[in-house]
Image (cartoon, rainbow, N blue to C red; front, side, top):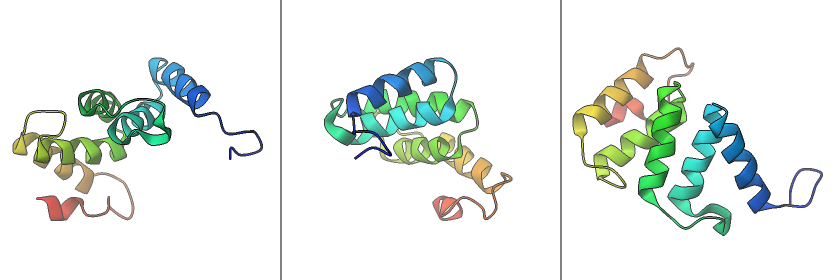
Length: 109
């Protein structure tokens, strides 16, 4: 169920897409999740597309997307394995102004 309205996953996807194209990093992150997990079965799982949206959000300092993209870079899921890029993302999370610091980022180093 939606909050106060009937659940409409396709409409949610369209709204996230519009917001992401308008520069909203949270919407970019949510699109990444949808492609990474196939959430609500609106889109097929597509790790490359998920990485694309996580990358766009990470460029806007979306910490959740930095973490997600770092994990993808470690595993090679949707992107080439790049331990150095992943480590740099996790270092940025540790050094960020998030309090408490981003969970588990220090364990990734």
